[in-house]
Image (tube, rainbow, N blue to C red; front, top):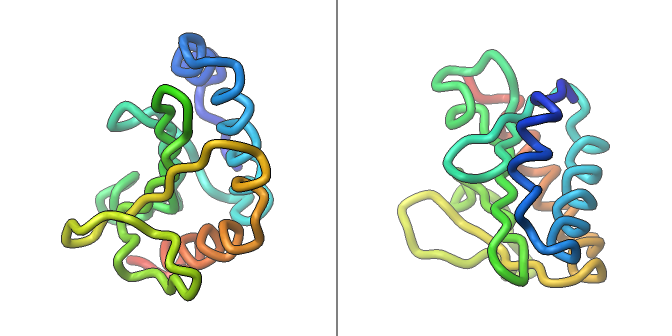
Length: 128
């Protein structure tokens, strides 16, 4: 994964509670494993991970966003309504965006989370 400016990520996560920061780093590691060519940047007040060189950049090639909120990380998918969700994890009723609130490492490490990230990465890789 192409790194965003580490100083930007450090600043972004600097004010986040240590427990939530650990969740964010674990999710980031999972996404890096699934989509090693993805890029990341701070966008929309979140760590945005996206497929490079896609129309509309971080939006068109969006894989996911890690949005740190109080006591949890909100794993957000801009194109989540288009993802398969057989476990019914995704929340939200907007036209496209969906999210999952994750509060501990057990939740973060569920195979169903990896499957959603993989589906989002495949969708982003095939977007134009």
